[in-house]
Image (cartoon, rainbow over all chains, first blue to last red; front, top):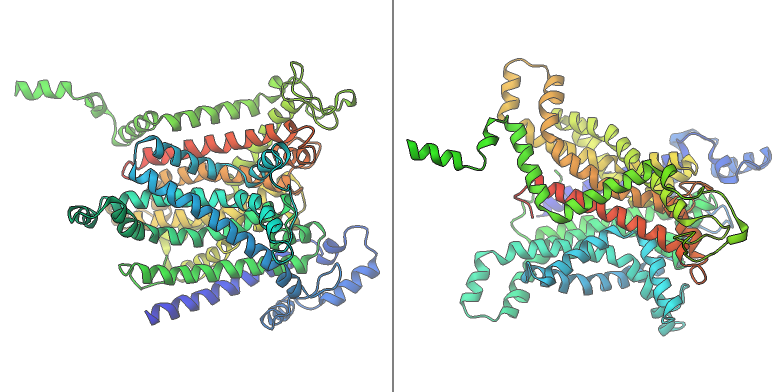
Length: 318
Length: 301
């Protein structure tokens, strides 16, 4: 076990190193002058030179990279071009908003997916199964921005039940904060919930056919006890990995959803950064997302091997 | 003897026996596919959408970019089935032309991903070694750590807004998926007896890779490519929605949605029709792809 964790940890650092190189090269190796990209075509030569000087763009590439990574390790992600605020403090200010959205979305996703997955597996071939399966298929096919707009149209414009967009901190006005979070969380959580329903259905079907389930039934245990206590517990194992794998897609959804609903989180930050060419901010936000994805996948791998002792702990190979 | 012969004649697969194994496998696969109603519906809709895209100039009742300020924000009517937008353009015509952008973006981005990903996966899986384990695998790990849409956005932003760059960006984002899949398929094929037999008879590696291994890996690649086209269509619409994909006045479903969002209260049709079309398109392709997967691998499910 210890060897597996150490190996997996080493792998994680290699991946993080590559991630940092990709993010760095995105702005620096691609054709075109980064300073020109940031300031736009109408920039004066003096302004360009000043920006190059400030960002250290006149140094050799490897030196620029080492400077950047060195800064990142010490928590210095550079400053925003727009108003010179440190990128790290911007990220720390936006992160809680996206975490709040993530928690809401996961709660909604699980609230739908667990009953839907169980129902369509235990009542296979019935109307429940078809409903669950259709939901899963529609959920992965509907683009988050269309779902978001549809929700605004139905619940804000037509029915007037929910405020259309915006954000309030929960400690300022808890009720309003929750009301504002419902639609973005659904818009982003539906896809996740569709994936989990799909996965849960097939893993439940597999587990329900296992010998120990028949044994549990023949011991005279109630159907509910068997399904929740025995089958669901084992069926959830593959679902845990889905959570990890889906996190990357989830952040992508956050970009779109936060834009539609004017939620000032990390996703919105990426878009604003891209549209205003504030590349230090974009680099920082994308780095943060990728680091979270890598760490979560590491934890999921470890959890997976603890939950299911049948998995060989050779690790690393995929 | 006579009864045995009679039994053979009753065998429904009798006429299949004369076919070569590959043709027979294909026929059985097609049989399984056509039994799956949802997959067939998905396939039919997909074909209809492709026809719509190709025949857009014939099918569209109006010029998709022609403005008519006399009839802006008109609700759906006999003249304009899907209504008009904020500068009087016909939504139906724009939705029909939008199919061109979406289908094109889906196919070309996945084409780019296949063109880069498959050769890397083929060679990496066949030769293994340090280059495979330390460079190819770790690099795909690293790219997969990025949220796909965010990476596509960043690439599109660096390359510059526009449909071509958006397709390139989406294609690059899909490369690791196909590298991984191709490599995994090759790994399972290269240990098979037919590869050993080919090696033993002195056939060159390149010939084994392309003429023997590659055709046997095509099934899963085809399924994944189909599903990736659905994903790429959503990605292009997302980029266009955010202003980094198709540029105005060219109609694209994503940019129509983002324009329409501002008129959701007084003219909901501007956003709803293109949205419904993206949903139907992606759903149909997903149904088709799922059906293809089940037909290719009946043990799954």
